[in-house]
Length: 149
Image 1 (cartoon, rainbow, N blue to C red):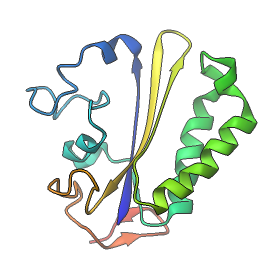
Image 2: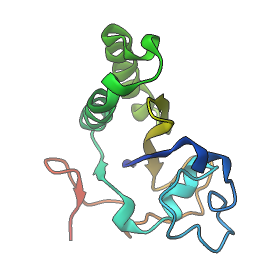
Image 3: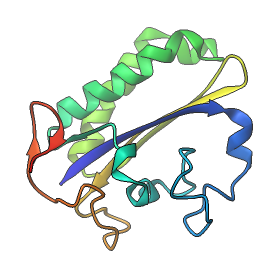
Image 4: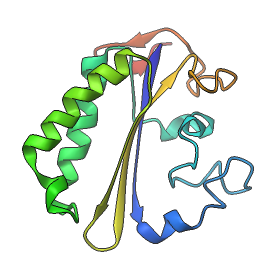
């Protein structure tokens, strides 16, 4: 079991267009907008994967870095709270260990939306028929978080 990391930062209005977010839509494979179903990130090109981890601590650290990098622009003051962000990142480890997806989404200033996701793979609990986008169920370099040859 490992997790792939995905992020998307774009116009909040793009989220309202759910056509390209559906796996059967002709633009789905090239659209970087968040899929409607979390497991469908695994159907996207491997180039969309921003990291791969078999270690829960490393996956959670990546998630936390991505969230903190945009936290100052969160539209909600509550979401910008550093203690709250740290608590959320700690809970990521538990969810990754259990083989769950971790999905975060925040509205940012300027009508933008940030999505940070860790998607379980090989197999995905709810969609075991979806293969690993990297073509490997094993062979993850724990130092770099990338698949090995």
